[in-house]
Image (cartoon, rainbow, N blue to C red; front, side, top):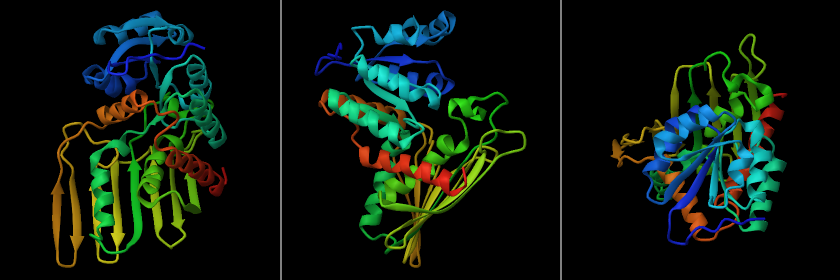
Amino acid sequence: MAVASEAADGPLRLGVLGCSGFARRRMLPAMAAHPGVRLHAVASRSAERAAATATPFGARPVVGYGELLADPELDAVYLPLPAALHAPWVEAALSAGKHVLAEKPLTTDPGQTRALLARARSLGLVLHENTLFVHHGQHAVVRRLLAEGAIGELRALHAAFTVPAPAPGDIRYDPELGGGCLADIGLYPVRAAVHLLGTGLDVVGAVLSSAPGQRVETSGAALLCRADGVTAQLTFGMEHAYRSRYELWGSEGRITVDRAFTPAADHRPGLLVERADGTRTLTLPAEDQAVAALTAFADSVHEGKGGADNEADLLAQAELLTRIRRAAGG
């Protein structure tokens, strides 16, 4: 096995397995702009698509994912393939000695997620799931406000992430590729619940519904509960008006975070804190959460951290997604 051998103080030489729209729109520009990352190569099954994606960023086009993994100059890979293809290609990348940043969800099965994290640890390689919003600083401010008692004792979280229906033929409608709104859209409010309430959450109930003619779920809701009675009410779907928000309700007030999961890089968050004695808005600096996620990944590689830096949260998220599907009868 050829283990990645990046210079301790040099940029991380990164290759991309696949040319998804999200990768081209969001992640490749962030890589090109990040001083700690060098976009080295982009692989596709199509030579034309590889060239069209790689050339604008000065990267080398490669035909075939295996060909890219065999590149000895490559330190790490970013994997934006459909969810059902994550597990085999993450395993292949780790076996080739590459650190891995994989799109969410890392896999569609908690057992596979646990096994891949253990594999990465055993090889001394970094494996991160690319859940961008957890790296945005606005959520650290929210957690600080909760710890300081800004809204008294926490009672409940209400989180929603919904998007309009994708175009016909979108991979999110394909069950063989890991489609459906739970893993793709519902993951966000589920991860918000873990991020803000901790890993000790149980699924009280859940509903998953499919639009007419679809073979995957297109909307859903879940109720989670912590041992102390704090609840999380989650709504998600991909046949809705756009909404990206969560609210934390306490004994003395409420915190509202709008554009919580997919803020633009130039968006200045305004955290609304409401109490009986008045309302205030905390306006925070703009931040590119894609750049922040890349920074966390590169830092973990350079610091020699194997596995994931948020492994407990990642495993709790994977388990909750499975339990929500089971509670909904799926």
